[in-house]
Length: 91
Image (tube, rainbow, N blue to C red; front, side, top):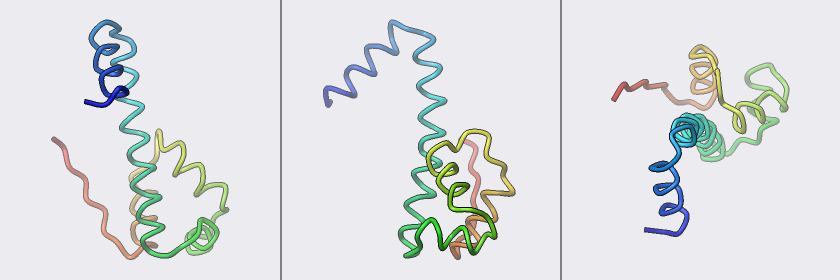
């Protein structure tokens, strides 16, 4: 286990508020990271994706860096613009 993983694991065990906030924050981060990776795999810049979605580059940056409260309809539009399908999974 890496030092970071060990630190997070130990801190989550002793600090309930950290554990709750960490898990939620990680999920939001992961959505943005997945969207950024899909955009880059499609060979698009933030500007090019923004043009396809008829929005501004700053909106794409905000989605990739702060994906909290993103609407499902927005995720569907982004996926379509990237030539992908959106799949939602409840685990």
